Image 1 (cartoon, rainbow, N blue to C red):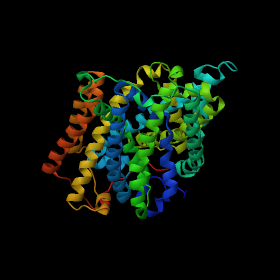
Image 2: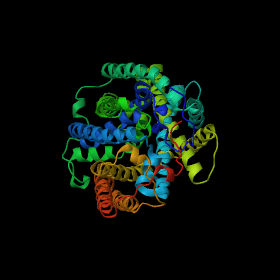
Image 3: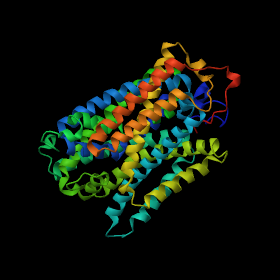
Image 4: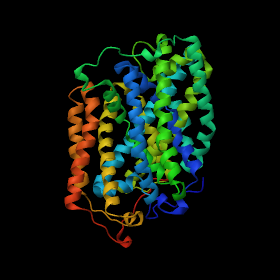
Length: 462
């Protein structure tokens, strides 16, 4: 990829044509997210709750909604060159944007912990008899090898690394399905999971519960904005349909989801009665040996390059905007790696799912407000050039109140019960946040100012 624009130039990297990158390079960088074991795990877990048919309906609805939402957000990011930090300033003001950046950084770190833990668990399981190293040692190994991959930034590493690993991951996943079909118990896999009617305590039909659970991964919408700002105007249609749109989510959610359900069923004697994120990966090592280790290594390395990049980028923004620290890029990568390793050393799975559920509600509110903002801009005829010159105060009341009310409602519902909350928490968050923001935006409007008055913006690109 071309060299990164100079930091602190007063505009997002994507705001200038010189800061944009070729479409296949951007696609390969973004499509690193396809290979997360999380998507295999979550589909198997949801199917165990609501059954195969309900999960399939939920997946199809999820692909459709994700495709539409990200088409809008990716197009806006390409048109304006805004990343999450600059976009959040328009929505919430300078103070409110700090919270958005914090949520983004924390979520990227948590996903880095999740995916890194899968590699560590797989390596520990495979080498238990020969090496006998503890999980803590493998945690260190995983963080130590992943950290240098993002030292050069996404433009130097991500597209090349993932362009090489994508075919390897695809071949490995196909091999895993074949081996599981031969060595496991694949018959009747479309009947996997709960077969009885879903109780009222779940908050509605099983397919709605499945859709609500996948709303907890709306952090991908924020990921989309930070990556799409680097897209070129002439590639807009390709990116909004293929790179960030329905094609990407068909592969990421639907294809990976069906594979995850199949593997969870076929390898259930190894996975156990409870589907866990590390369960499928470890089970594969029993039937594929070193090839399973290589599959997990390839898939999780691809996803963690994106996690580490986005976490360190947003930590850098927090350091500069909150603490006025202007440190080299490498320092923030190391800070993110230290935080990731520290979280791994705790009993992470005892609380990290709760933390991710809370963050999922916060992110859902951000996305809902962002969509309403784009709709208002289009209706009012505000072109991208004018949007780039718009200034913001310390606090934007429509955005802050909309996000606050929506998140409060979502968190209250989430804490009323696991099943009911996972179904309705994100949905009610989106509805309330969008409704409050739309009303206040219509009443209060928004202010714009000439470019000369624009405050300095710290880029999230590297």
